[in-house]
Length: 87
Image (cartoon, rainbow, N blue to C red; front, side, top):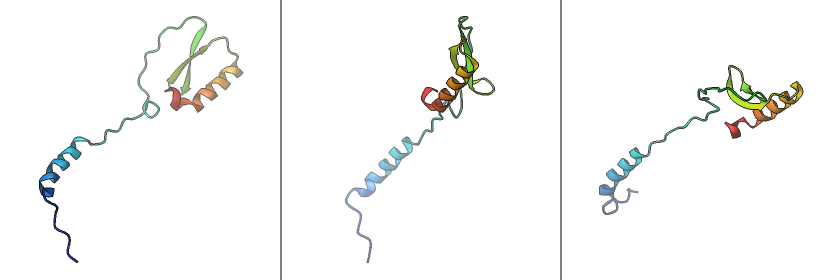
């Protein structure tokens, strides 16, 4: 069986369609979890401190300084589990 002939004006429409496709190339945006931005840490009031969800001062969060070490560890654990939502 032979292929069906092209529809009228099909040949004329294809070049513009291809040009439109070129204009919409995919642009991949990396999340801040994959590539954390550089942040400038500022002085905090005496009752607050920075904690980091990853080593090397990545993903800073501000927490209360008065928390006991067990409370800080529990808070950091919860924040780490929701890192994608808060980053």
